[in-house]
Length: 251
Image (tube, rainbow, N blue to C red):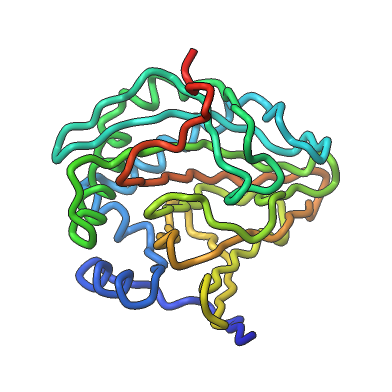
């Protein structure tokens, strides 16, 4: 397998759609994220405070205590962003062999976060970019706040290993890295041999992937002092409805 360890090229806004079409992924600077979502970087950075208020993930099958998260779901039609009733996060075992096949009811995202103009601009701006690549009537969007910490001495951003998520596109934003080493991002062609490995470090920089073409994972983190953590936001965009449990997925 061919794996490059060089820092990935950062794609400017004007080349983003074509590069994503050609390569199956792009790495985007925080400044470009602000540009394409028509918000300011300072307004995006102001959202980081909400990652200090995440409940522990109770579903980790490895018995770990290192992951905290919240979840929300939306439908986007054109310029209309609509929050749907709170629902379970569900994946089939085809996409998540570790946690697939079960309804995972995470706490909803904070109302002050989801009601902010920057949050709405972020979700809509990403939808507009993806619609330039794949025009659809409705995007079914799931949003996940993650904090991975070193409570157990090691934290695993992707305990399921290298995987696809079962969506059209996956956007992974790094928000902060505090007192850690590791957390390297790895992206591979699902049907090829090429791969890329790098470390996202700039707050609000982005890895955007075509989930049908790419497999991804992040390596474990370890503290460089007494304690550390890594905060990310993951947005998934799907064109043919949410992945829902056969049991319905709503309370």
